[in-house]
Length: 282
Image (tube, rainbow, N blue to C red; front, top):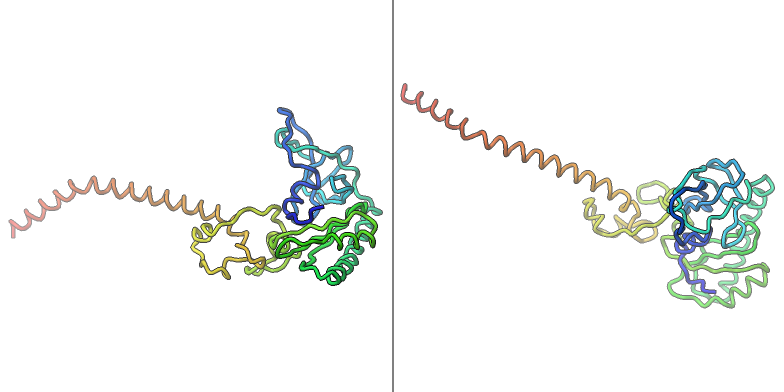
């Protein structure tokens, strides 16, 4: 087991095993969009016989096992070439009993967090535990952590497996993923975009800050994760649109001035003649 993988990679590939384009061409398929975390990526599933609407809790099968998610996109027809495989079917709409199981798993995850922290201290491992997640069927428990480098956690996995008697997976994540999981308040005074609505991280460059005439002081353009703020990326398009509009207005104004200059010689000659006549009469 290699625990030194990024959360962003795992969440993009694991839930629906959606990492290969569908080879079929033409036609369409009805799908619903499901999220497993508040601001996680949306995965497509076949709705089956269920009448599903946004906000419905559902039970689905993923490569990690049986999991509970929330429908965020109602049934829609998508072209087959936009769907990735395998496209699994929703098992059922969550029942009150299923919701109770999810709540119990969340309670057990909090207990597992405390136990894992204790074991990390006992082994003296240089790692920080961030979150613990149970699959719906408790077929696997995932422990997310951060660390400066690679960590040999084999003995820790053995201890946790002996305690919980199920599959254990430790997954190393980056600082941006840590902020996404934990949440917080950004420099703008609002909740973090990554933990409230931003599904995927996108590359952010210092050039975007320059294009928005922002101070290049790292403390001014960095989020609580210590990386460049995600808003620099999705606000950059707005600044590009404004610059294009300004360039178009400037070009239009320049064309107008050029047209005025072309007419000025004849107007200047008449004005000069009038002055000469007035001077002669004086």
